[in-house]
Image (cartoon, rainbow, N blue to C red):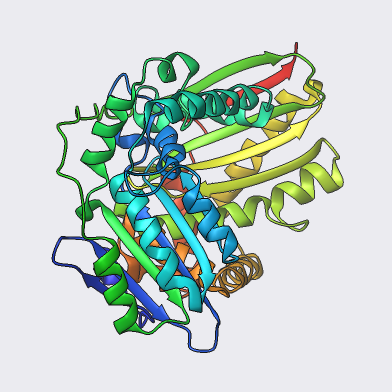
Length: 421
């Protein structure tokens, strides 16, 4: 299925190094910038019990030095050259980006490779950084939108890793040790799990040599415990949760459906279209009716989140508590209309235009391109990154209506309502 969808010419080059690492390169001759984006299949789905939260904590500790680089040296070297670094962890990956002027990439990229391959994870830095992560967890408890979304995830995926918080819990982090983290790092930060993307003002030969030199000295794999890949249960009926939070000014209504992962990537593209149809812009169905005309919600949106094993389709509304039941019923009426009567050509054309424009706007810079290639190669394969506009334009109304019938059931979904305590 994935191979059949690759119909566009991929503008980058994809190589497999002798050690198993994937290297992707695209030269943009007239830019003075080089972006390196390193993606590792070492997200939450790799965490064994009880090491929950380890992947995100490790992302912090990667920057705390190696035997060759003392803590703080990397940041100082990058900042002194005007460079920028960033990092993020999710369920299917962790990734690390470095943006520098072309003239400085030879001096900076080897440092990033050194950190990723040989993180020392010293005990004193571990204890200090654990307090930073604990504070991040505590701050998340003050965000009602985060609480609501996490409640939906736990309701849908339950004991599967997708149902856990990327941050972990306080009690989990207090059980971690530097030795455990070193084991996790040496198990998963291996070349076969890693994609290095370089986009910008650097030619292929120079980039190839730089990656070969910077990503060759991998540690010996460790005997890390395996994650327990429990299968998420299918949703039968309506899984309803009600939460009460203090100091809450607006209620939240979150409705969610479990939908296919990358094994059905064509369906994923169609679900993107359905999310735009329902709640992207003032003329979308739910925004026009519930916010603009009836004024029952302060805001409403729909999102499709593509994941490797199982994706998520959501509708979220911000509203007064007394309107919760009515708004959920009206959303279901709109969905019933979609399932029964489908989509007209004008609606479909609008959705396709919006998504193709968004794609164009999100592929303008070396940073955006590097992230796009790395993300797709980590959850599927890099070449799919350029097929998106073609796939979006190829849908007709009948196929979209059938997707809605298949995946957006009126009878099988999860719903979380959050109201003031």
